Length: 206
Image (cartoon, rainbow, N blue to C red):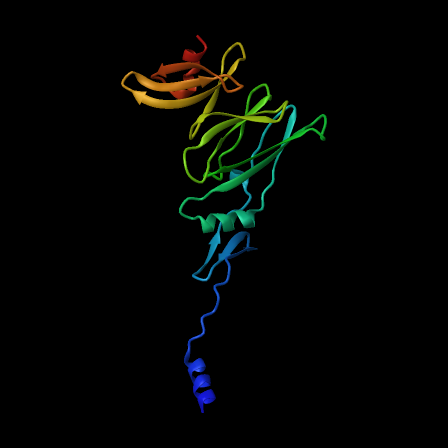
């Protein structure tokens, strides 16, 4: 009798299944993310807006990533997506010589930028928390270096072919404040300029 009652009680207890892990797979040119709560299709197609194109004399550039795993990571952290960017920079004259640049970014379309002489490459590395870090890599040695906290930057080249890394700082009534760095990441000047960023070389190259 006791055994029958125990069996009846067990049958009355609702069975709670274990939550299945999130899954991601390719379907119809999109990435389908499937969770216990929903199924969602994400557009991570490798079209031109995601495929970097570099016209470089010395280096060939390849970006390698797993789009399925990237989509799954983004879905799990959908409040603030964080992408892993991974570039192979290969010497065209000696393919055994290569530099691997890997960093995380909140912007899937953000690209690396090469110095005009192709000796350096720059990018903004975003941690999961905290400000982004403008980082450079010496392509001749493969050594990275941090320049300054920043969310964006641009390069400015003077008539004498010297190139500088420029980061916009705090604006004031006198104009926009820009920090100017040498190619190897040393602060060389601070410029207050009222014109458009694309014409700042007029102030930098004086």
